[in-house]
Image (spheres, rainbow, N blue to C red):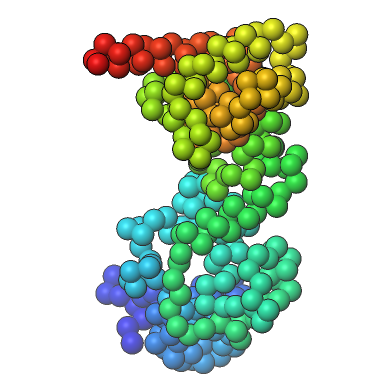
Length: 309
């Protein structure tokens, strides 16, 4: 075994043993690929008269394709996963369950719980698959379990980055995002439509489940605009009550009314929250402007269709 290179610098195996000893390392935890080097380290410890530390060789972490985990699978460092929007607690929880399973099959653990129940003896010798989908599941579980105030504090900087200097209802957005958010990096994509109007197709006004159609939207939106324009105060409860009363007066199911309102207000098929919440966050002026723009889109589209016929 070569201990010193020709240039006088120590080899890794030699330096590793000396470094661990001088740092008073009692437990060496590393990947199973280093298992074959352990006897060499032991000989060096014995030669120096030092106490051999406890070795823990962890199973190899692989991707779903069976290959050793690498950048081609995704982020492989703790910092990289944080940058992708994962919480530290979720990352630790997921990693702890790679090659180890508690007796009762519990999956979600706080750090204190892990310290209490984790047992090295229960680690498997077989390679463990790092499942990014499972990590996302853990992250969503942790986000949903947070106290509302803590969740709001966590996402506030991300919301501020999207809204810039615009005023917005952070508490309401947090209420909408907490049950839906998977990763923090999704926030911008989920709420950007509230700050920027995106072009959309009139076919979005069609929804089979809600029994909504573009033709019905043309009839409904003028009524909605009239009712909302007359509201004395732009509040969530007032918007809710006025739209439900309108649906009853027009003899429509709630979904038939809310679908075109939400599409016109958002321009998106999928949104974090329904029509009432979106209207509330947009504010009176922007909400009414979007509803009028949606009506114009439908009218123009209907005119084009008529002309083509």
